Image 1 (tube, one colour):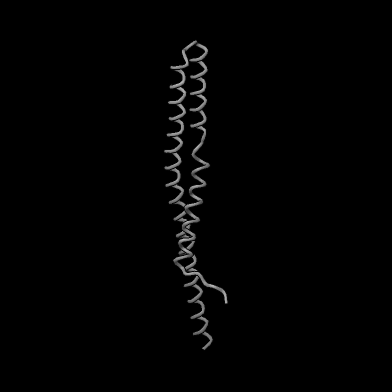
Image 2 (cartoon, helix red, strand yellow):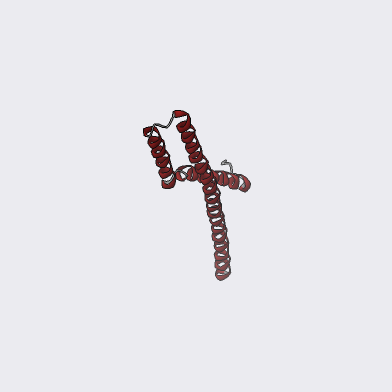
Length: 119
């Protein structure tokens, strides 16, 4: 006999899948063009400072600060995107569930109508 999963378990599994999809989408989207441009700007600033003869003790903190800012901006953007993508995935999940319920209700109504007509 086949095992039937409880609806709560199915919902939790689908919710976990939605969370995983949102994390993956946010992880790939957080490194966008703005962050790449900011990284290149930091690189250009560091190269210019080095060519101007500025000592490494000044250039190194500038580079570290720039990389830290890139990480911080990417992290914040990823967090914001994750929240937005999670809401989208959960809304999609809710829509699919209501669609299934509507289909089940429609099917039950059609069966009831057929049963009355055939009497």
